[in-house]
Length: 129
Image (cartoon, rainbow, N blue to C red; front, side, top):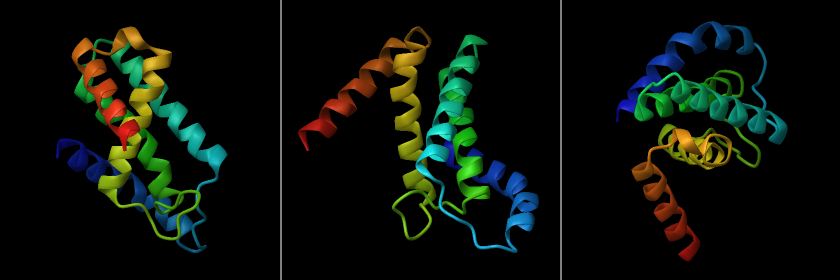
């Protein structure tokens, strides 16, 4: 819930000027390359925040928001393969997963053991489906 509130508040405050500029033209879905760039930026943001001793949860919130700003303000929530904008809840879940997966490779020592275990359990459950 906090992630959702933070994301919405930040999106509204930043996207208004950005959307004013792009509203004159139809927003295009993010390309695969753009999505990869946004994901990498969010992973770097998470790792840096954790390196600065910022709480795990706060670091994750900031990283997810960093990924969401361009997706929603520049692309209107449209990603490759989508015909309609992502829902906020869906985006937050996917972005959190991507940040954790990337951070497990880029800065594994920055992730608390309980969060690693929780993530690995969730991934194992997804593989069963």
